[in-house]
Amino acid sequence: MTDKQRYSDDELKEFKALILEKLDKAKKDYEDLRATLSHADGNDIQDTSPTFKVLEEGASVLSKEETGKLAQRQLKFIQHLEAALVRIENKTYGICRETGKLISKERLRAVPHATLSIDAKKNRG
Image (cartoon, rainbow, N blue to C red; front, side, top):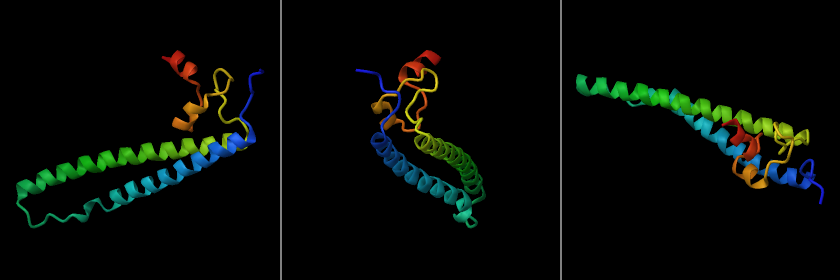
């Protein structure tokens, strides 16, 4: 049997559906994070003791920072998924960018935006 050079159109459709589903969820999660960031000051603590207020503000800053990092990571994930959709359209999806061989379906189902096969990833260290 000859090694396949790319996934079939039907296989690409299957991956596209998976990616679109993940993309939809990722965008909703990103919007939730952004909403949390823009409404983080909604909990008013004006009537509490000054000591508690300082502690509360410190926790709020940390939480805002963590939420901001999560939002950045989510945005990067969205960008990777969108790039994977472009590769599907170009029919280059699922091809390892280092070895030129097909990335296993199992890996693509787990990490649909993967551009490296497991072997290539291991070789990178």
